[in-house]
Amino acid sequence: MDTLLADYKSYYKARMDRYENDPLFNYSYQSEKALSEAMDSCQELIEFKDRIGDLNIKNAIALVKDQETARLAHYTALQENIRSLGPTWILEKIDTATDANDVVTISMEMDQKASIAISIDGFIDSVYGGLIPLLENLEVMERAEIPAQYEQDRQSQVEGIKTDIKSTITDLHNQAKDWDATWQLNLDLVWEFRHRKKIPLSDEMLQKRINELKNYL
Image (cartoon, rainbow, N blue to C red):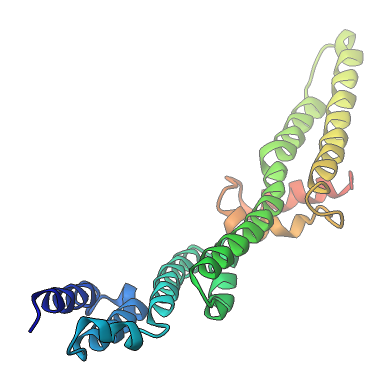
């Protein structure tokens, strides 16, 4: 056997072997196996040109499918419903790729689309990162027991906090609508796991703050 042909057969077998029995790379293993078998069937190296067919593009697709399947499983386990959109959309479309450029384009476009969804979803962070602390400050100020001569100052600070709450909500809407013109503040989202896990309040206290915040919407 020609030495160069033997080297190529060894090369493609080594590529196949690195994925064998690896559950994270099942698609890649099958793809590399097909390539290795195609090469192994050649009696001369020139034959591979005809036998490779579309195996190279299938190989690129297989790797993307393995990577995105793993990424989807990771985000699903974390209950990151929005972050899982990227790998979901890529997996739905990647099989339509007909060349290497398609593989790259599909992956980039779907990830970009998902990034916008993630950014929009992130606006809910302002509820527990900005609005709830303002509500807490408001409660402290409204309940404060102070000498009568400072009552006017207290009322002024109460009104100032209420104004801050309203302006924060207005600013939030203005920023979010730069991304999505139909966006509305959906307070129910705070209960979804990806957001709820970030809020160090009991369910009872969180519901109390949400109810208070509804008065400003």
